[in-house]
Amino acid sequence: MNVSRHLRRFTALVISAAALYTPLSHAQSGAPSIGKSVLVAAIVPNYPPFEYKDPATDQLMGFDVDLGEALAAKLGVKIEWQETSFDQMVSALNTHRVDVILSGMTDLPARREAVNFLDYVTTGPQFYTLKTRADAFRSMDALCGKTVGTSRRTSFPDDIARWSNEHCVKVGKPAIKVIGTDGSSDARMQLRQNRIDAAVQGGETLPYQNSVEQNVYAPIGQPFMSQYTAIGMSKDNPRLTAALTTAFDQLVADGTYAKILAKWGLQQHAVPKAMMNAGT
Image (cartoon, rainbow, N blue to C red):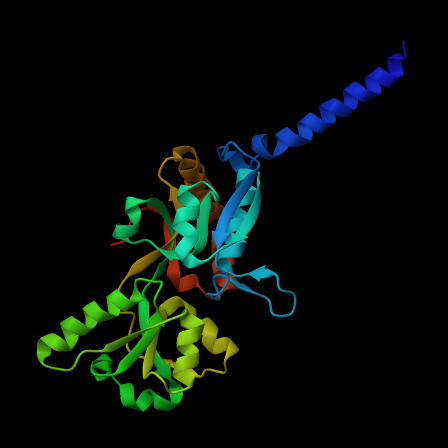
């Protein structure tokens, strides 16, 4: 009997088993296990600075990407990004094709029927126009009767309509004409082509967009609602919800969250701790 050979085989098996077990058992700072070694996250990389692709390398970049990687490190797992369409994200979550949605999704009461939300930054819809047209929109009231574009896949079309009804129609002014676009980049293109008068996107994203487009855009007033951007999780996975909540609070406590916010110029949109389903 070759004892040495069997000992080597046994040692190799122990090392292999330990390698498989390590991601689940050695989460940083005592974060609870999620019961698997890979966290699959749905993402739509078209909303900088939250998620987009580096045009030079085609690599995913952005605040959400950095946050997802940091959360995975706390949990002792790898994160796998699954690109999808915005319309398919909730379906992918509820059929367990993905574990989380980490793609700039707004926490809305209507969405909570199917999704639990961990709110991680403040947000709010912001009217804006081209800087060359800013003098025509010195106040938000100047938007009445104008054409405003925004992504049809978000809550922004309904948000604009409600604002218009309250601030235009009810005081005898013409309503805003809302144009649904194929995302915020399409809205900006239509704005530059003078096909619309103004547009709406999350106020926290506008400074970044100006930084890459030579300050071509001018905000109109302040964000007209207060909302939260959130990580979407399945309602039937309380273990994952608890683990991510703990991991996020650990990122806040050790300063990692603040560093990621600062990297992407989002410091003013920080939350003090993990909050569940806090959006209104």
